[in-house]
Length: 357
Image 1 (cartoon, rainbow, N blue to C red):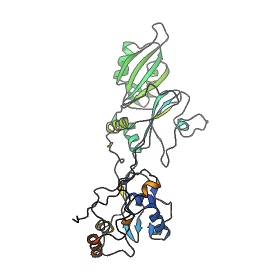
Image 2: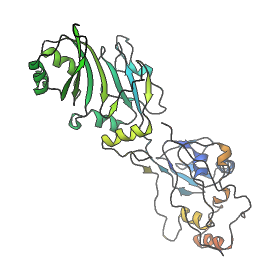
Image 3: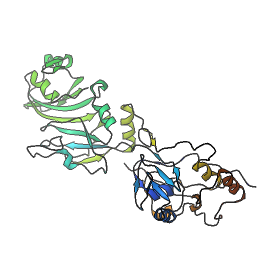
Image 4: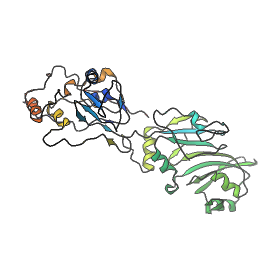
């Protein structure tokens, strides 16, 4: 019994520019080889210019096959976060007139994006630094109104008196306004030693704020280590100068804490032009659906590039004929069988992209 053809409930969503023929293959418009032949024949255009084999397309490009607009869905890439154990003697800047070592020299390449430092540590301080590819996330973590906690281990010469502890908790007047710590705890040290450790928590990150707080009380900070930023603590196994990418679960936890959606596909998505067809003219997507049998499923795919061999199994009969048929002709073929037959449909499955942090 012939069943009425149905359309897929979801289209692939891409998170970065992709090669044109692979995008179209993953969306079910044809096989890789067939689409390359159409590109060479000039039947596929990008922004109304003839496409080229290997050309990459993104969310702002308009793609047409035989003059018909093709809809592709793009979403911003998922945010990435790096943890870096900064040693003393490095600056948090991309360049330095004094040619001092910079933390950015230690970071891996990020493709077309860039790493954004979440806050800073001064030249002599060390500890946890966060880097992200998301400007929105960086802003949410750094903005004073969000009061994201920063925890530090502070070594000072001598010990705090009860009055000094109370001053740190109640507030100390600095050059740029009053400042205080959210909490302070004894961090240990030798009973007879000259130095002693304390753990302090602040909810803002002004320049050299921890050092200036103690200096205002006549105390010298001999060592300063950041051990936590927000919900992310520095892993014990992360040695000085080492980088570690935040894993999926911890990244989702950080995004939620920052008030962002951790769902796959990034923070929102954009689409290319999807204008409605002219009156009396069926849309290209509708004609494409009408020419399918109900069980002709396109492969599921993500924005990750899959192998040519896997993508070549996509049904190559989904490409419209030239010239494009009318809506009535498309429905007629849907009842009597598709052009090209059912013999070389290929496998029903398709490549699946795996998210890699």
